[in-house]
Image (cartoon, rainbow, N blue to C red):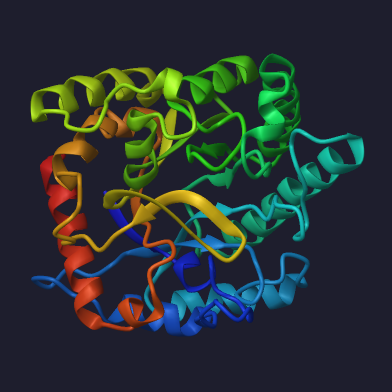
Length: 336
């Protein structure tokens, strides 16, 4: 299994606001990743965020090829891409009116274009394009859950057709902040409503899916409650992963301390923690194994670490990345 590092921790939750840290450049994120090494093994590649200031999604073909050259010069391939589907970027809500959903679909087309250039260049040979509903929070969704999920499913279905036409697959990110995707049961209902498993699947993240168990944004679907035993945890974990694993085509290794966290305009989401965080709730290797059974049969060729919203000081420490890489290697070895 190829081991990748995500580039978006240098961007998500960062900005120029009074309570925000500055973004970290793409080249510096690449250098931090390239410096990591554990017992002679290094990261194989990166997963890539199609978002300024790392990338202008509307950049010229030549500019995108230069980015591909930069990534390749650091010894990396590109795996999964994150489409800029959110309001304020290229896209807008998948649950919105026609103008909004048209923007959402244009963002997917744009991501497919970038993927095609990277594929032709040779820097990218595997991976998916990640999307979400681009509807922050669940309040509007709750006004009419059935109709809201149907609307998102229709948008996702059109997006999946676009991806298929470009030879790509989409992965819907399971995270409690996205309407219609905010619980394991609602995520499953949405995937089944789209009904295109060959073109649209699930992107599982260890940190985010932990909060699925706790039912943070959907108490009616909670599988665990505070004070649970280890036996109760793994029984619930198996129940959740058995439902979502068949749909899982992209996977993030991560740690979570059970807190809900946010920064900037990316609020109320699962808190990613360092791999060795003493408050971490997850046995990373054991939990990853539940998701990665028969991963090759679902086309998963790489796994990615997600350190979304790590403080810059944490990102700048070489030890952070060596500890992460060590955890990734252990996940990979457990699959053999």
